[in-house]
Amino acid sequence: MASTENSMAWLEAALAENLRPVSAPAGLWDRVEMPAVAKNSAAGRSMAWRLALTTAVAAALVVGLWSFGRAGFLFRSQEFRSSDPAAIRAWVKDRCGFGLPLSAGVPPEIRLSEVRLQNDARKSTERSAELAFNVENRPALLRISPLESAAAGVPARHRAAGDAKSVSWVAEGRLFTLACATPEDLRIACSLCHAGGAL
Image (tube, rainbow, N blue to C red; front, side):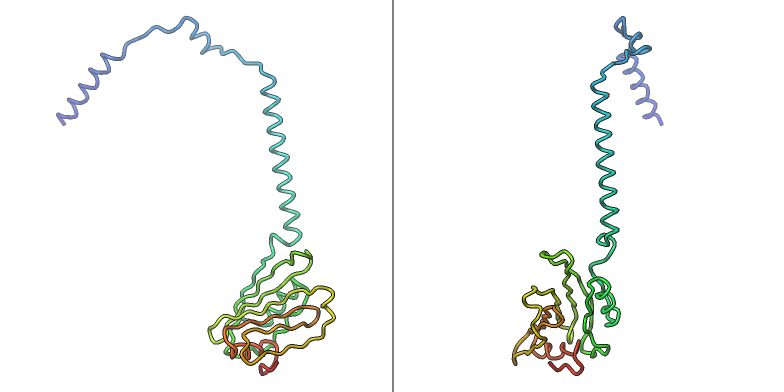
C-alpha cells in the first residue's frame, strides 16, 4: 500500500511540474467554434461518380450471379455421392439427358461411390460423366463422353484383351471407357452394365 502511495505522489509531482497552461494562437477558438466550410465542388462530384460507379458494378454483379444461378450452374451440384444405381441413373439423366446403363443388381465386389459431371469444352450443351467406384477395394472409373458427329454412327461393340485394364466402346452416340486396377477387376466391373459381367 505504501509503494502505491509513493508512486502516486511521484506521478502527481511530475504532472504538476510538466503540465502548465500555455498560450494558444489568437484565432484558434474562432476556427474551433465556427470552422470554415470548404466549397470544393469538384471533390463532391468525384465522390458522387465513384458512388454511382460502385453501385452500378454491384448491381451488375447481383444480376449476373442471379441469372447464372437461374441457368442452373450455380446451384446444381456437379458431383453426386451414392451407392444406389437407380439414384445415380436418375441424377445423370436429369443433368445430362442420357441414361447411364447401370444394372439394378450390382455385385457385392463393386461399391459405387460417386458420379461427377464435366462440361465439354467444345460444346457447352454436352456433358461428360465419370462414375467412380471400387472393385474389391481398388479404384475404378467409367467415363461416358460425347462423340464427334463423324463417330456417332459407329455400332456398339467392345472387346477387352486378356491382360487389359481398360476397355472403350461406342454406344448411343457416346464413348464409354472403363478403367480398372487389374484385368480381373475389369471383368468384374463389366457387371455394372451387363448381367454376369460378360462383354
